[in-house]
Length: 258
Image (cartoon, rainbow, N blue to C red; front, side, top):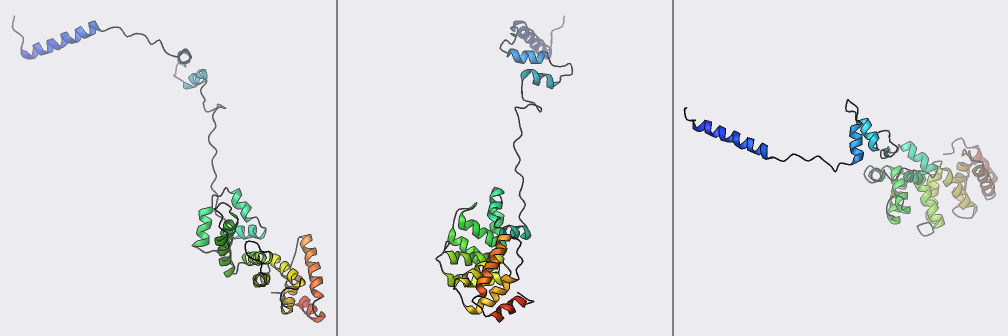
């Protein structure tokens, strides 16, 4: 018999070692700590391995389970158009709308007020600051933004500043300072300014020189609201008592109220 080569002896030794390990290995104990519910679920799996049976047996929340609902999605709010915003402002609904939209547009509103300098957005942002709607309250800064809108001839800003100075809201009461704001807004056809301006003239404020314009603007205003219509009629009747009859007739007959 020939002697084994070194390579053959090496291979033979490895085989013997492997056989020894296998022979001495202890049998693997069966898993005994598996949850019975899991075992039962596995046993009920369909032959094709369907997971639906296991899910049902384990009472896990699946797609059709009432235990799971996807989180509600927050719909993105589109920035307001100029027409939309002006309509809300004229109805005094602008701050309510911002709150209803969960304050999502604050940064966009500020950018359009401070950078683009749109007067409607300057007024909106100023009102938000003045009353702390969706932003930290800063009344002086709010009035500043309203003034910037008024300087661009925004009727609602002119009227609101005039009203604030008339009533002493956020600012010191100053009717003389209020009148130019109200006159400018009224001359643009802004009804709230027209009503307040005539009311102040009836109370003796302002100059009789301005009575004819104020009368003409309000007389030719188209007013759908019945209460406002009646208020306008009452104010015009009272103002006409302070005016010469021919001036009243001239104001009524004007074909160019503005």
